[in-house]
Length: 166
Image (tube, rainbow, N blue to C red):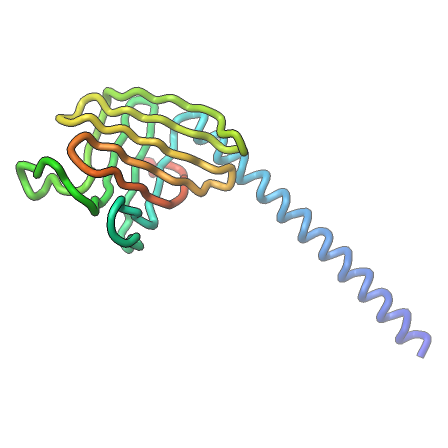
């Protein structure tokens, strides 16, 4: 009976130590993720992957295909769907959505009040003025607002990830 009590006490102690180690590693993983996101954002080398579209009018839409905005030092590429009201119809049906590759843009990075970053991107070399506001948390989750002079604004929820290398 005494041996059983010692064995139970030993198992409880080992289990408690393993739980403490697991909790510490979870905290470390969060810290590593925050450092990785910070490095990508400061280096201006990341991509925003959209998971949900939030149009100004109508319901939110879960996106099943991969839509993204890739940000680099010299280019910004956008491939996003659009749901909402357009004030000017596109000349060609293939120009629907928010699709462009820009080499002339303004990029402004600010620290957010509660951690994370706010990124302001103004596209200059498209036939219409497009402004983007990307709010990035330290965990990598993000919200993108797209303002276009010829359309209603639209927002996207998603996350920030490493850019795909060509």
